[in-house]
Length: 403
Image (tube, rainbow, N blue to C red; front, side, top):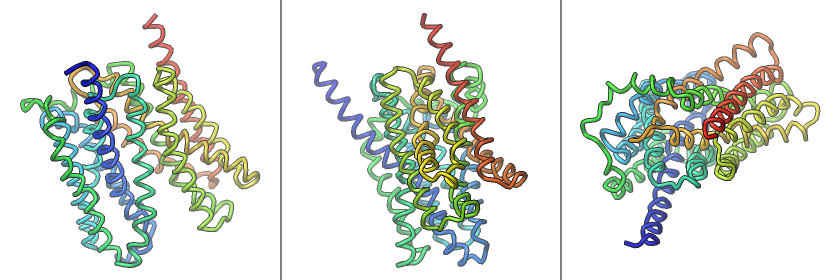
């Protein structure tokens, strides 16, 4: 095979792999957010208050933390393709659990979805890190991560109308077809993706080794902290925006939901945009510093939507572009910083999951003390500026090391 033929084959493999891993990300995110799209229907059927559905998402991420630490060893031992297929099957089983219509079934289904979600990114990161050329690494990972807000769009647009027509339990049953269908497609790719698996690689025994590694290496340590901080800010920004618009500024539910959709759309666009920028400037940390600073500015200005709506809406767009758009660059940088023989994506994402859990809870605590969403957002903006400072410091350290 000539060099040009090898390059064309690699590009074709990358295109197929990127399309399939992105679709898997959409399916995984849809499984996480499916019930949050119909909280009143589910709550009414279960005889609980609608806001209690929020704990279901917390259960998903809580169950994912431990398996994020296991994911790296599982990928090495079983193969990235097989682990990615397992993630999809677990998502489908999670839908089936939710379709049971019982609290126990929903709880079990949520745990399965969380485990699958924890395995999804380490699997896809391993696959894409082997195929993506260095000059396009950030773009490739960012396109894949655009599947997160796209999954949110699928959940928001597909689940409510289907639930109204067929019932929410039948809808959960039908939604299981998406991850199951993708899991079948994985069968074609597993032989190509899993050629580097090591059947003797440790799984449980590698947990603390991986954690020691990410905290010992400066670049990975910075990425771990950024994942925690930025995810805490991201989930807080998106989780409380509608509540602020309705309760503090007395917007209608429809108008508030439209603004939330704008933020999510900004996140999808931002993930691809920052991937392009990172590849162009050649530094993921520099982009992560810029994203953190702009997210902080957005956090300071979100409360202006009540007094100066146009400025406030601009801050919503900025929050979407930056506060929801950093993920692909962080995963690409994690793949670059990982030692040879596989990525430590799962180990880093363990702390990103922890940030997802800690952020909204901390925001709710702060709001409970001061009773003002705008001021709460301003306080959380400080976290973004801290993250920006850490990313910039790491960028400068690496620049000095390169001479």
